Image 1 (cartoon, rainbow, N blue to C red):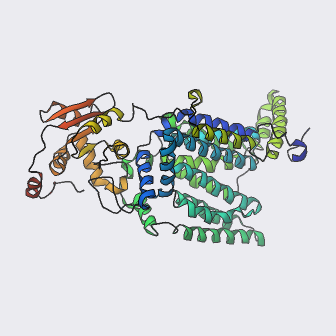
Image 2 (image 1 turned 90 degrees about the horizontal axis):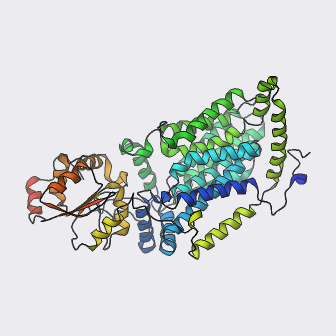
Image 3 (image 1 turned 60 degrees about the vertical axis):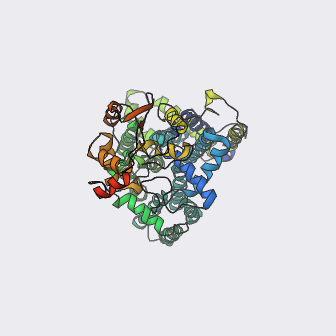
Length: 533
């Protein structure tokens, strides 16, 4: 029989796929299948591509260039470097290229998480289960945007902190270098700083009086200082931090954004999180092992963040999976003791022995040969524009159910170039697909527009007082909104507006006559009452 620690005898043949490779493949196929439309459903993806094009033309933007309501105002692109990469991929391989890139990032992220959970002491079955559960927690955020890279960088930071705590490995010193990249890719680098900060506190409260423990406290403190300094290595300097502060604390718009709301446990998307929370209670209550204060601190902090905001759930799951893995080695024995009295303990012993043998083989399989080969083949298929719709390869497209594809095609054919009142979720699509290019009324850059503007926009959709103030100020020539809204119904009944296009997704309306006295009206009104733009 193989022992858990006998890696030399347990080392599998190089050509046999490891469980890590199977996890990689499972996540990859799931992402590709979803990617046929779902990975492209984020309203910000199109404008991120347009920002990337601007980066290549003139460098990272410092002011808004996409809306007529905020044109020229200061604005920071926290994801400018990733946007530049998205623009290149989109230009050469369109939506399928973007989905391929996103699917590969996700697959490597969760493969790495599997190995992290395995290193925590979990057997191969527990490691695979916890990893796939964590993937399920984050699946709602599988979208083609820079936060996918942030997930991977977050996991690397967490993994290095864990290794440093457990055995003093020095990978933690790479974190400041990673942060230099991270702060130019996504604002999620703040989450990495929180992980290092929690590690510092965790080391301090669990450190023995041995010199090695004190050195780990000093090491975490040094890494945190260097990582904070590294965040200044970006085109915006300290203004990036002010930008993020405005989003997180002072913009007063978080309650208007779904991803900043707490998870709804009545929704299907929250089922994996519910399962992870219940599993945490079971393992903490029945497992023979106890968590160290280091691990418990991280688990409590990130479960708190995950319960506060939907957008933090994926990060909370990445932290929780290795921590729960620490509790699993003694769980089988505890369960056997409980049910062994009923004569059902033998099959548990047999399963445990087989899992231990398999785990020893998996820990010895360190080279990601199959995952690398699959990545190369998928990249080659994308470059060559091969299509395998059954696997989701080369089949990515924007969904006509979600995006106003036909309506914008009609808008592009219309000679009018006046301002458009548009649905917030379609602003990014207009920014990318309008031909000739158009400035939009609003898009999903909430921090740019502010709460008062967004509240007025929501009131305008209901044909409230804000609509009349906005119409008087901007003299909209077009309205592009979803069918069934009060604004859409009432404008279609008005003789002042004609319908250029209508389907189940979008309605495009055109004003029959644009008043020529807009400037005089605006001056006489002194601006739009009750609305600040």
